[in-house]
Structure formats: C-alpha cells, structure tokens
Image 1 (spheres, rainbow, N blue to C red):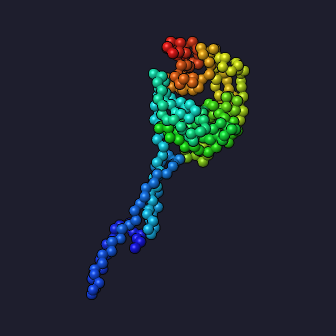
Image 2 (cartoon, one colour):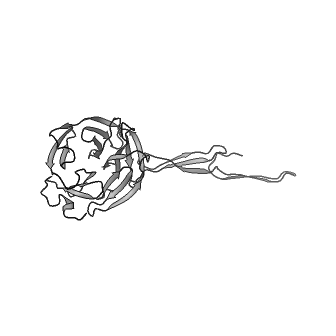
Image 3 (cartoon, rainbow, N blue to C red):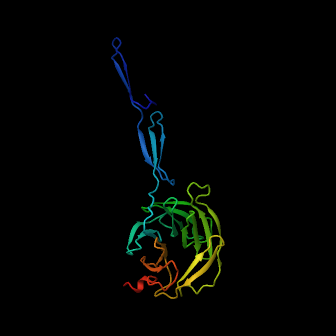
Length: 276
C-alpha cells in the first residue's frame, strides 16, 4: 500500500470469525540526499516529496569555500593554483587542474565583495574565453563567456568589484562582479587601450605603468631599467605595506616597488641582496 504521509502509521483490524487480526503499518517513503553542483554563495536545501513508491529527494547545494583576507598572494600558472607568502617567499600548491583541466587560466584577481578569486579561462580566439570563479581550496566554477575574441594575460578586481583584464596592454575589458547585480558576470565594456607615452622594446626594461579606468589610457610612471635577467614578470601582488611585489616564472617574489614608485628604495630589487 502506497503512503503519502510523513509519519509512521499503524492500523489494527480486529479478527472476525475465522479471519485473523490484521496489523497495517504504513511507513513514509525514504529520502535520498544528493549533492549538486552549485554557483551560488549561500547554502540551499530543496526537498522533493515522495510519490507512491518513489522516495523523496533532498538536494543540498553547498557554496564554494571563500578566502579570508589574508596576507598571502595567489598565483595561477597554466591550470595550477599556488598560495604565495610574500614575506618569506614560500609558495604552496593549492590545487592542480583547475577549470575544465584543458584550457589555460590567466589574469586572476581577488574580489573583496564575495572573497573569491576570478580569472579568465581560455585562449581566444583558439578557444572560447570564459570567466572562472575560484575558491579557497581551488574548487572552481566556469561562468559565462567574456564575449571577446582575444586572450587576456593580466587582470585584477578593483574596490568596486569590477574585473579589469588586458591583452598585453593593447585591449581591455570590464566585467561586473558585484554579487546580486543584474549584470553580475557580464562584460560591461571592452576596447583598445590608448598610450600616453611610448614604450621601450619588449623585455629590455621593467616599467611601472598605470591604467586609468575612466579614460582607458596607460601612463608610464617609472622606468626601472634593465633588471638582471629577463624583464618579464609573471605576477604582481599588492601588499598592505603599500608595496607592489613582482615575481617571474619561478614564482618567488623578487621585485618590490615602493609606494613612491622609485627605484632608489633599497628594497626595490630583492634578488640583489638575496642568494638565488
């Protein structure tokens, strides 16, 4: 006998003549709990009631683990996430194989509004370029398309939860990352960047530049000249001491740009006083 109630029910039918007494026990259908993929930011539970002999279903959707505003930097290399201690220069592998495991991830930044990392995944126009959200343990969600035909290699999230990314300084895009916004995850604008000053040939000098988010113009601030080794920096971190720290492909921060932006500060080039 099928039962649609939610508590166990026992009914006794007294004996009659030669018919024995009958005890009818009605037990509600069991529930099956499943965990589903989720892109939201709060835990939700949905219950599907049982029907006939079909058990009920409890669907639990758990959000990704958020980051704390800690002093560490985070580095993405291809499809692997690292945590970088800027103070002692130690790096810790968080996870290998982020995203879909095939497309490269670049231009990562931290969003203070929801405590997630965001980046671009893909190598447009060869593959589609998508927004990807990354949690504290390296779990990730691939979100919508960024709707551009070029690959980006540098990016960050500003204090208004706007994600900015650039393709080598020549193109730029802006994505809304404000939680609850009707345009969350959407590319709001993109275009070609303008240059206020001419640049030295690629990799012959390390140059500090600034991008104006209103005029979309790059301005050169300081030319640090030729720093020993190749002048190609794979990541830049902002620290609460006002410094910008740069690291090359070996992951270790070895350039510190002071708040003044001047090269004469003794902490500017870290590897000049530290053994390789």
